[in-house]
Length: 203
Image (cartoon, rainbow, N blue to C red; front, side):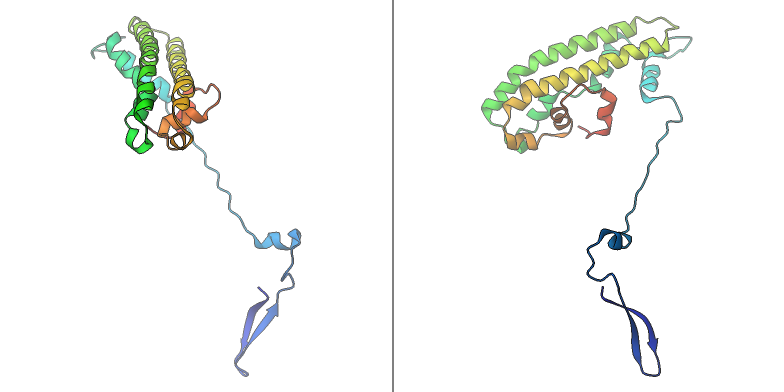
């Protein structure tokens, strides 16, 4: 801006102007003051127990330590634990229309899916069996470590499955349209603790 109004003379009915001495200047030191910016800092703090521990207590405390609620069986625990990691093959196959997946691609994904499911089933069965066998007064830290380690393993195996089987089956355009978690796993090139995925897209 070359001129800026600094007043008005009522007698002459004329505006009074001031010339901007920095007009046309490209020197950073002269222009930086006229380019304000805003920085926002968000801070989050968990005041209660961490989410993993809450999940552990919610599923293991019933029926233990004098709690009269029904104790969850290994089968019950398995159903709950396997919800922690989405099946990438299922997510892609249910979006075949929007992803423009052809018949050959569908068949390739369906051939690879059983091996993935068998591996995950074995993982959840072992975890659920171990947790169901815990006594009334189990060690919270040890149980939590077992739980988190298994879930991390599930996410890592799923990441490998996406990059080894799902990604090579699809073309570049389809990879750009991958849904939620599948896209996150495709774009992650190294093992990642599963809690890091919770900040990513939901499936």
